[in-house]
Figure: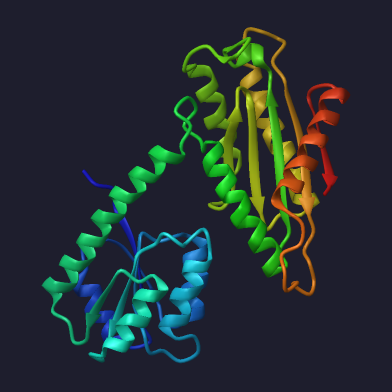
Length: 303
Protein backbone atom coordinates (compact mmCIF):
# COMPACT_ATOMS: atom_id res chain seq x y z
CA UNK A 1 0.00 0.00 0.00
CA UNK A 2 1.41 3.37 -1.03
CA UNK A 3 1.81 6.04 1.65
CA UNK A 4 -0.71 8.87 1.56
CA UNK A 5 0.41 11.79 -0.58
CA UNK A 6 0.48 15.41 0.57
CA UNK A 7 -0.91 17.67 -2.17
CA UNK A 8 -0.84 21.47 -1.97
CA UNK A 9 -3.43 23.28 -4.13
CA UNK A 10 -2.78 26.97 -4.78
CA UNK A 11 -5.48 29.10 -6.41
CA UNK A 12 -7.11 32.42 -5.54
CA UNK A 13 -10.42 31.29 -7.07
CA UNK A 14 -12.68 29.54 -4.49
CA UNK A 15 -14.58 27.83 -7.31
CA UNK A 16 -11.38 26.29 -8.67
CA UNK A 17 -10.37 25.10 -5.19
CA UNK A 18 -13.79 23.49 -4.68
CA UNK A 19 -13.49 21.74 -8.07
CA UNK A 20 -9.98 20.42 -7.34
CA UNK A 21 -10.98 19.30 -3.86
CA UNK A 22 -13.74 17.19 -5.38
CA UNK A 23 -11.60 15.91 -8.26
CA UNK A 24 -8.77 14.80 -5.96
CA UNK A 25 -10.87 13.40 -3.15
CA UNK A 26 -9.20 10.21 -1.91
CA UNK A 27 -5.84 10.94 -3.58
CA UNK A 28 -4.13 12.02 -0.34
CA UNK A 29 -4.02 14.82 2.16
CA UNK A 30 -5.16 18.03 0.48
CA UNK A 31 -3.97 21.44 1.68
CA UNK A 32 -5.01 24.76 0.21
CA UNK A 33 -3.57 28.26 -0.25
CA UNK A 34 -5.22 31.25 -1.88
CA UNK A 35 -2.05 33.31 -2.42
CA UNK A 36 1.56 32.74 -3.39
CA UNK A 37 2.98 33.93 -0.07
CA UNK A 38 0.65 31.61 1.85
CA UNK A 39 1.65 28.72 -0.42
CA UNK A 40 5.35 29.26 0.28
CA UNK A 41 4.74 29.45 4.02
CA UNK A 42 2.79 26.18 3.99
CA UNK A 43 5.29 24.37 1.75
CA UNK A 44 8.27 25.39 3.87
CA UNK A 45 6.57 24.33 7.09
CA UNK A 46 5.64 20.87 5.77
CA UNK A 47 7.07 19.95 2.37
CA UNK A 48 4.31 18.60 0.06
CA UNK A 49 4.66 15.73 -2.40
CA UNK A 50 3.11 17.73 -5.23
CA UNK A 51 1.89 21.29 -5.88
CA UNK A 52 -1.00 22.29 -8.14
CA UNK A 53 -0.34 25.95 -8.84
CA UNK A 54 -2.45 28.62 -10.56
CA UNK A 55 -0.41 30.96 -12.76
CA UNK A 56 -2.42 34.16 -12.43
CA UNK A 57 -2.79 35.29 -8.81
CA UNK A 58 -2.61 38.68 -7.10
CA UNK A 59 0.67 39.37 -5.34
CA UNK A 60 3.12 36.60 -6.19
CA UNK A 61 2.31 34.95 -9.50
CA UNK A 62 2.46 31.20 -9.98
CA UNK A 63 5.73 31.61 -11.87
CA UNK A 64 7.25 33.50 -8.94
CA UNK A 65 6.06 30.86 -6.47
CA UNK A 66 7.52 28.08 -8.63
CA UNK A 67 10.85 29.89 -8.84
CA UNK A 68 10.95 30.30 -5.05
CA UNK A 69 10.13 26.61 -4.52
CA UNK A 70 12.88 25.49 -6.90
CA UNK A 71 15.42 27.85 -5.32
CA UNK A 72 14.84 26.37 -1.85
CA UNK A 73 16.73 23.07 -1.25
CA UNK A 74 13.87 21.81 0.92
CA UNK A 75 11.26 22.10 -1.83
CA UNK A 76 13.37 21.94 -5.00
CA UNK A 77 12.38 18.35 -5.81
CA UNK A 78 8.63 18.86 -5.33
CA UNK A 79 6.81 18.44 -8.68
CA UNK A 80 4.78 21.49 -9.71
CA UNK A 81 1.78 21.25 -12.06
CA UNK A 82 0.58 24.59 -13.36
CA UNK A 83 -3.11 25.40 -13.74
CA UNK A 84 -3.84 27.89 -16.50
CA UNK A 85 -6.83 29.33 -18.30
CA UNK A 86 -4.72 30.15 -21.35
CA UNK A 87 -3.46 27.96 -24.15
CA UNK A 88 -0.23 29.76 -24.89
CA UNK A 89 3.02 28.06 -25.78
CA UNK A 90 5.00 30.92 -24.25
CA UNK A 91 3.45 30.27 -20.83
CA UNK A 92 4.27 26.58 -21.04
CA UNK A 93 7.85 27.30 -22.04
CA UNK A 94 8.23 29.70 -19.12
CA UNK A 95 6.78 27.21 -16.65
CA UNK A 96 8.89 24.32 -17.89
CA UNK A 97 12.03 26.47 -17.77
CA UNK A 98 11.25 27.19 -14.11
CA UNK A 99 11.04 23.47 -13.33
CA UNK A 100 7.33 22.65 -13.65
CA UNK A 101 6.53 19.08 -14.70
CA UNK A 102 3.13 19.57 -16.36
CA UNK A 103 0.28 21.92 -17.29
CA UNK A 104 -3.46 21.45 -16.87
CA UNK A 105 -5.77 23.84 -18.74
CA UNK A 106 -8.89 25.30 -17.20
CA UNK A 107 -11.59 24.18 -17.20
CA UNK A 108 -10.23 20.67 -16.57
CA UNK A 109 -12.01 17.33 -16.43
CA UNK A 110 -11.74 15.47 -13.09
CA UNK A 111 -10.45 12.21 -14.65
CA UNK A 112 -7.65 14.14 -16.39
CA UNK A 113 -6.66 15.94 -13.17
CA UNK A 114 -6.57 12.65 -11.22
CA UNK A 115 -4.56 10.88 -13.94
CA UNK A 116 -1.95 13.65 -14.17
CA UNK A 117 -1.61 13.90 -10.39
CA UNK A 118 -1.30 10.11 -9.97
CA UNK A 119 1.35 9.93 -12.70
CA UNK A 120 3.55 12.61 -11.15
CA UNK A 121 3.13 11.25 -7.63
CA UNK A 122 4.24 7.83 -8.90
CA UNK A 123 7.26 9.37 -10.64
CA UNK A 124 8.16 11.27 -7.48
CA UNK A 125 8.03 8.11 -5.37
CA UNK A 126 10.38 6.42 -7.82
CA UNK A 127 12.71 9.43 -7.83
CA UNK A 128 12.69 9.60 -4.03
CA UNK A 129 13.59 5.91 -3.79
CA UNK A 130 16.53 6.34 -6.17
CA UNK A 131 17.68 9.47 -4.33
CA UNK A 132 17.56 7.70 -0.97
CA UNK A 133 19.58 4.77 -2.33
CA UNK A 134 22.27 7.17 -3.56
CA UNK A 135 22.39 9.39 -0.49
CA UNK A 136 21.62 7.10 2.47
CA UNK A 137 24.23 5.40 4.62
CA UNK A 138 23.58 1.66 4.37
CA UNK A 139 24.75 0.92 7.92
CA UNK A 140 22.79 3.54 9.88
CA UNK A 141 19.96 4.66 7.60
CA UNK A 142 20.85 8.35 7.98
CA UNK A 143 22.33 10.56 5.26
CA UNK A 144 25.73 9.64 3.85
CA UNK A 145 28.74 11.86 3.19
CA UNK A 146 27.62 12.68 -0.35
CA UNK A 147 24.22 13.90 0.84
CA UNK A 148 25.85 15.90 3.62
CA UNK A 149 28.23 17.65 1.23
CA UNK A 150 25.38 18.60 -1.10
CA UNK A 151 23.24 19.91 1.77
CA UNK A 152 26.13 21.84 3.31
CA UNK A 153 26.85 23.65 0.04
CA UNK A 154 23.17 24.45 -0.51
CA UNK A 155 22.61 25.71 3.03
CA UNK A 156 25.77 27.81 2.88
CA UNK A 157 24.35 29.63 -0.15
CA UNK A 158 21.03 30.16 1.64
CA UNK A 159 22.90 31.46 4.69
CA UNK A 160 24.93 33.96 2.68
CA UNK A 161 22.29 35.14 0.22
CA UNK A 162 19.37 35.19 2.63
CA UNK A 163 21.22 36.56 5.66
CA UNK A 164 20.29 33.50 7.75
CA UNK A 165 22.29 31.91 10.57
CA UNK A 166 23.69 28.42 10.00
CA UNK A 167 25.02 25.95 12.56
CA UNK A 168 26.88 22.67 12.22
CA UNK A 169 27.48 20.08 14.94
CA UNK A 170 30.11 17.33 14.76
CA UNK A 171 29.46 14.21 16.83
CA UNK A 172 31.99 11.61 17.93
CA UNK A 173 30.57 8.34 19.22
CA UNK A 174 32.64 6.01 21.39
CA UNK A 175 34.08 3.51 18.88
CA UNK A 176 33.90 0.71 21.44
CA UNK A 177 30.13 1.14 21.46
CA UNK A 178 29.74 1.49 17.71
CA UNK A 179 31.06 -1.87 16.51
CA UNK A 180 34.33 -0.35 15.30
CA UNK A 181 37.37 -2.30 14.24
CA UNK A 182 40.82 -0.75 13.66
CA UNK A 183 39.83 0.22 10.10
CA UNK A 184 36.22 1.25 10.60
CA UNK A 185 32.99 -0.68 11.03
CA UNK A 186 33.55 -4.44 11.00
CA UNK A 187 29.95 -5.16 9.95
CA UNK A 188 26.57 -3.43 9.60
CA UNK A 189 26.06 -3.06 13.33
CA UNK A 190 22.45 -2.95 14.63
CA UNK A 191 23.60 -0.95 17.67
CA UNK A 192 25.18 1.77 15.53
CA UNK A 193 21.97 2.01 13.50
CA UNK A 194 19.90 2.23 16.68
CA UNK A 195 22.12 5.01 18.03
CA UNK A 196 21.99 6.98 14.76
CA UNK A 197 18.21 6.71 14.52
CA UNK A 198 17.81 7.81 18.15
CA UNK A 199 20.05 10.84 17.57
CA UNK A 200 18.11 11.72 14.43
CA UNK A 201 14.88 11.93 16.43
CA UNK A 202 16.47 14.74 18.47
CA UNK A 203 16.65 16.87 15.31
CA UNK A 204 12.94 17.46 14.81
CA UNK A 205 12.78 20.10 12.07
CA UNK A 206 12.41 18.94 8.44
CA UNK A 207 15.51 20.89 7.36
CA UNK A 208 17.85 19.45 10.02
CA UNK A 209 20.15 16.79 8.54
CA UNK A 210 22.05 14.09 10.44
CA UNK A 211 24.74 12.38 8.36
CA UNK A 212 27.35 9.72 8.98
CA UNK A 213 30.71 10.93 7.70
CA UNK A 214 32.93 7.94 8.52
CA UNK A 215 33.18 5.30 11.23
CA UNK A 216 31.52 6.64 14.39
CA UNK A 217 31.76 10.24 13.12
CA UNK A 218 28.51 12.11 12.45
CA UNK A 219 27.50 15.65 11.53
CA UNK A 220 24.24 17.50 12.14
CA UNK A 221 23.44 20.44 9.85
CA UNK A 222 21.11 23.03 11.42
CA UNK A 223 19.75 25.73 9.04
CA UNK A 224 18.42 28.96 10.55
CA UNK A 225 20.13 28.19 13.87
CA UNK A 226 22.33 30.51 15.92
CA UNK A 227 24.84 29.67 18.66
CA UNK A 228 22.16 29.50 21.35
CA UNK A 229 20.09 27.12 19.23
CA UNK A 230 23.13 24.97 18.49
CA UNK A 231 23.88 24.75 22.21
CA UNK A 232 20.29 23.73 22.92
CA UNK A 233 20.52 21.04 20.26
CA UNK A 234 23.82 19.77 21.70
CA UNK A 235 22.18 19.43 25.12
CA UNK A 236 19.23 17.60 23.56
CA UNK A 237 21.64 15.19 21.87
CA UNK A 238 23.39 14.58 25.17
CA UNK A 239 20.05 13.85 26.85
CA UNK A 240 19.18 11.37 24.09
CA UNK A 241 22.62 9.81 24.42
CA UNK A 242 22.32 9.52 28.21
CA UNK A 243 19.04 7.62 27.76
CA UNK A 244 20.82 5.19 25.44
CA UNK A 245 23.79 4.87 27.78
CA UNK A 246 21.52 3.95 30.67
CA UNK A 247 20.71 0.71 28.83
CA UNK A 248 24.30 -0.04 27.79
CA UNK A 249 26.28 -2.72 29.59
CA UNK A 250 29.59 -0.95 29.03
CA UNK A 251 30.06 2.16 31.14
CA UNK A 252 32.63 3.59 28.70
CA UNK A 253 29.90 4.83 26.38
CA UNK A 254 30.31 8.53 25.62
CA UNK A 255 29.55 11.31 23.17
CA UNK A 256 31.53 14.43 22.30
CA UNK A 257 29.90 17.27 20.38
CA UNK A 258 31.62 20.20 18.72
CA UNK A 259 29.78 22.92 16.87
CA UNK A 260 30.29 26.07 14.87
CA UNK A 261 27.91 28.83 13.80
CA UNK A 262 27.93 31.30 10.94
CA UNK A 263 26.10 34.48 11.89
CA UNK A 264 23.68 36.22 9.49
CA UNK A 265 25.27 38.57 7.00
CA UNK A 266 23.52 41.91 6.74
CA UNK A 267 23.04 43.27 4.20
CA UNK A 268 23.34 40.14 2.02
CA UNK A 269 26.50 40.39 -0.12
CA UNK A 270 26.55 40.28 -3.89
CA UNK A 271 29.11 37.48 -3.82
CA UNK A 272 29.00 34.53 -1.41
CA UNK A 273 31.81 35.05 1.14
CA UNK A 274 34.02 32.27 2.43
CA UNK A 275 33.30 28.60 1.90
CA UNK A 276 31.17 25.97 3.60
CA UNK A 277 34.31 23.95 4.39
CA UNK A 278 35.36 26.73 6.76
CA UNK A 279 32.29 26.01 8.87
CA UNK A 280 33.08 22.29 8.86
CA UNK A 281 36.69 22.96 9.86
CA UNK A 282 35.56 25.19 12.74
CA UNK A 283 33.18 22.46 13.96
CA UNK A 284 36.04 19.93 13.75
CA UNK A 285 38.21 22.15 15.92
CA UNK A 286 35.41 22.52 18.45
CA UNK A 287 34.97 18.74 18.47
CA UNK A 288 38.66 18.33 19.23
CA UNK A 289 38.29 20.73 22.14
CA UNK A 290 35.24 18.80 23.40
CA UNK A 291 37.28 15.59 23.33
CA UNK A 292 40.05 17.22 25.35
CA UNK A 293 37.56 18.47 27.94
CA UNK A 294 36.29 14.95 28.41
CA UNK A 295 32.95 13.30 27.88
CA UNK A 296 30.12 14.00 28.12
CA UNK A 297 30.46 17.53 26.89
CA UNK A 298 30.13 19.92 24.00
CA UNK A 299 31.83 23.03 22.65
CA UNK A 300 30.10 25.59 20.40
CA UNK A 301 32.48 28.03 18.74
CA UNK A 302 31.95 30.90 16.29
CA UNK A 303 33.26 30.26 12.79
